[in-house]
Length: 163
Image 1 (cartoon, one colour):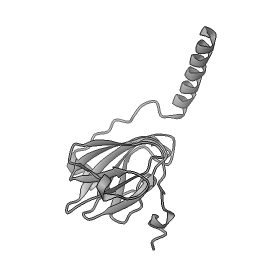
Image 2 (cartoon, rainbow, N blue to C red):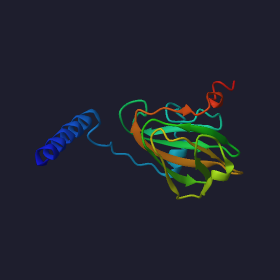
Image 3 (cartoon, rainbow, N blue to C red):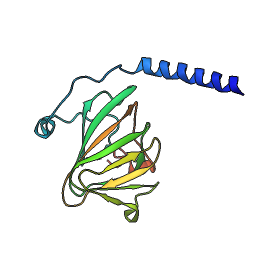
Image 4 (cartoon, rainbow, N blue to C red):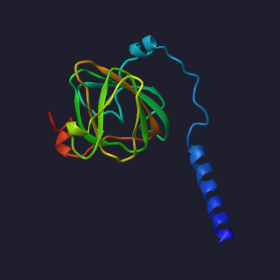
């Protein structure tokens, strides 16, 4: 039993070292004020909802590749984002506005939590979630480990299918 545990720990250490070798060793030096961040142009790309009312700004990393990334989601007022999920665990921080966020396979207003500025929430890997804004825009900082994607629970909700 003791040797099995030692062998398991050794394998975990090897896998951990191999995974670490693929990811960048350190983050770059990076600092931006809110004013500087507001001037960064939209980048789009993986990890956003594809919703026309959501502007995605990747500020660190590349969410389409292995490694850490950070994105700003700038969501217009009166946006409704149907249930979807992403590959990889993500953490959201509400930087401005009031975010209405819920978990589940279908958009359900009764399951929305009201998350004011300063709130933090998670988007566990492959866990469906949905969101909306009210009368004011919202900015959310998303951090995670790539690669990520966006898969809608109902394919009809995919923004490209709605065109």
